[in-house]
Length: 239
Image (cartoon, rainbow, N blue to C red):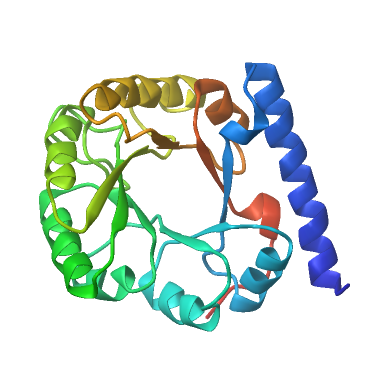
């Protein structure tokens, strides 16, 4: 086993222990939480190793890095998630390889995703990124739709050809009423998920929590956690 594979094996085991402990503390089955490894800025060789180690979900945030990496890893049993702010001029490229876009936050992006998904003959899963630091009708500092805009945007996604409404995503906010209160922030996301599922029962995915706060996300009820540095460590970055 290479040094890097050994490192990733050990790191994955530690993260697995954390998720399992968080699930036990919350009275949840371990199978209720899916690990997404955030491979942004790390090379395709790491993605291949992760696949060998049983990882099935990886996430990227920049198309210019993700597209060639996904092409290099074509054929591996992976689901690719896009978690960064997505510009409409990158949508055609992203739709070619991504399974789920977790950062859907505006109508114009929905329209572009639908058009390209239909053109490519694909179905693309969509999570609405919720900005818990936004006002009633504003966007968050790191993108995202305000809580008050979720219902309207969800209806647009659900009615758009080529798209599948999968649920909600958030990033713990750095400002506003939830700053430094990750568990409360993730609890608010779960409340919004409950509301969403009344109209869209299948939209039951809740993506929240990263390396530093995955326990809070699991406690709140997240179905997916996005973990980068706790798995991949501090490594020389791409570029």
